[in-house]
Length: 169
Image 1 (spheres, rainbow, N blue to C red):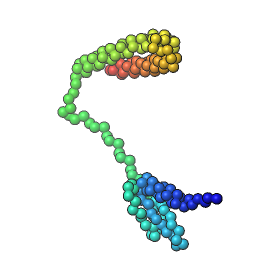
Image 2: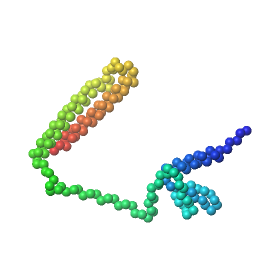
Image 3: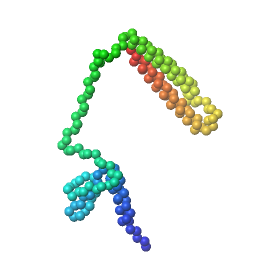
Image 4: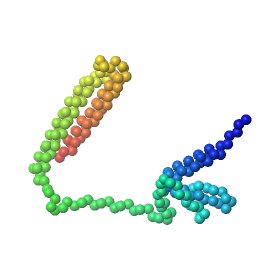
């Protein structure tokens, strides 16, 4: 009957865990109590604990003292006053800019609505025509799903453009 000695394996695994814990947690201490029992820990429990120097260990973040006050939240910045020499735009100039912006957004909206109509036409209420390169039904289903996504995205774009046009003064 063969007996196995697992002690070297256990020591090897334990050293691996200690080294991985050291690199993950920072400083490791070896503490020996009065009866000679050794303990590895990440905090110094008493004066007899000695820090271990483990290569590649990442230092732990400094602990906050128990009685330390939490940091006060930074006060909110007051809105900056417009400096006197800040360039001003007269109302007619602003109206012209708004009109240009509205026209650009309307052009984008018209293009997006045309795209949406084409996608809906191709989608054909969930049953688009099968193409010659879609002999496999999975390819067909993939194209149908892609069309659904494109239609959804295009509908969201149309809604966003309409909201943006409404926000113009």
